[in-house]
Amino acid sequence: MSYKTRLKIGEFSQMMQVTVKTLRHYEQKGLLLPDEVDEWTGYRFYSIDQMQRLSTIRDLQRLGFSLDEIKELYEYGSHTPSIRQLTEKIHETDEQLKMLIQRRRQLLDWRNSRKEIKTMEKFSIQSLPEIIVASHREVIASYEAIGEMCVNKIGPEMHRLGCKCPPPGYCFTTEHNKEYKPTDIDIEYCEQVEEMGQDSSIIQFKRLEEVPTALCMKHYGPYDRFYESYTEMFKYIDEQGYKIVGLPRCCYIDGAWNQEDPEKWLSVIQVPVEKV
Image (cartoon, rainbow, N blue to C red):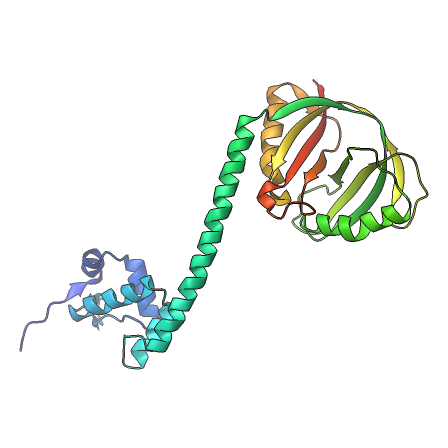
């Protein structure tokens, strides 16, 4: 009887540079069973032949095959994919490559926009004058719905009511939720108009008092990243000895209506403050 080298699971793991946890996962999947399990101790032993099988499994994984797909190959008596399967993986890889190229472009744009922000003054203190606004309050599904709400609902209704907006135009939103919600956002949209009008079921007119002191900060990017700017603003507020005395306003300069790339959207966050 010839001698057969047996490796304990730890030894096999070390030589093949695979964690024991991964080997146990392969075993549970029925993909790489131990060559022998000692019935008394429960120790698992692996053979030299299983090194090649494990190498093949890892090679197939690197080529994009899932463990279930690899198991299916072995169940059909082969560990070599067919031409059809390879063609499908090539197509999947092409699609992933397109996504990665797009992601790289977006990351570059974001990085460049962040660099631009670093080169300009982040914060300014301004006074916000008393104004008349056309207001619409609604619970929306997400921040992305703001643009659609403005274009399809608020804009047409303001036009129907004959609203006149003084140049250069000033519109903003305030949130009325008492806590963060990724959906069901209670938001109020306000746009400055020249005079009070007749309220409708969509638009209500009101006069907003002057805000003597507001901390203002430019925000580049989509609206679901406002938290990044809020983090910097609130730190600045504490450091400079201010306190917040009103709801923040998110003023929209460039958005979906004139800029397709969300990374280039420009908003200005205005927070009413006063010195402590």
